[in-house]
Image 1 (cartoon, rainbow, N blue to C red):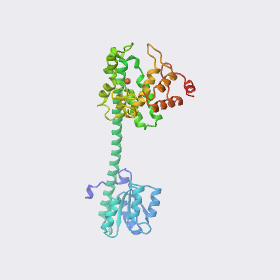
Image 2 (cartoon, helix red, strand yellow):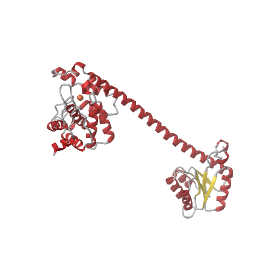
Image 3 (spheres, helix red, strand yellow):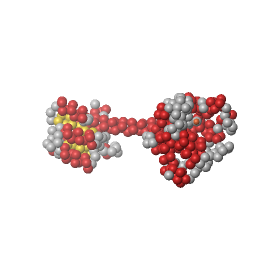
Image 4 (spheres, protein in one colour):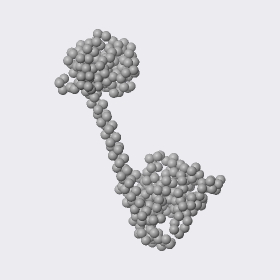
Length: 367
Ligand SMILES: [Fe+2]
């Protein structure tokens, strides 16, 4: 059996020497074990009690502790509990004068890797110690392997997410090419909506999903006829109905891709719902509309008002906020409008519209 066991021969192989602490109140037995172990290349230290052992371990780490069960002051089991709690990487072997099966089972259940009974047979001690050292090496190796594996899986997941977001971003860009007046709109809406959500103390992972949804909110316009999308005059009823299909088109398009991101999907589907229930596509009322969609509705309208179009200048921040306030309770959730005003006043988000009013004027208007 011992031929199958890898013994760390320490200095003789150039591998790090296995450090071992032998704990026994009988100096003669410590010396005996020490001689046996040192012949196999272990570097040994001795302690005459559990308390002495803990003292030693606080000063110096070891790989293996071999401890007697019955000692004055602190017995082997108490020492074992202490070691497994404070230094879980140290392997512990128990030694007892009698073959007490109950004590052995208890020690193994607390975390001892093996159990020796006195009197020793030298060959058996050598083999069992080597086995314990090997077991510990495998446990540590396995843990490092698991940690590295977890790291690699996380890294892969991050790369996949990045790729996924890049392809979604290409969809947004494809839309912005077709709908030349929405250039940068999605990004600005995402920034405003994120700031409102943080002001409302939404948890950060939810905010990030909301920002993703805001970035994609108009993606369904890819399915809208270009002539309607870029028409400069007033829309006919049919054209308006066609353009307002975009929340549902976007929701269907992204549904399979964003199964894990329901907040983002809610934004895409419900950003044209109205607080008074007269919105699209589901006619939801008040708090029936997901909060993330109520937030994006405010950010979306604000950016639409402050951005310039070829046939009109963008409104000032001041005028856009006044309009949001006027429509609070009808089109918009008043709590979201108020949160956005606080965000604008605090300067936590820059207004990037064509004719952004300096924040001082907005502050003056609010006073
Ligand atoms: Fe929209």
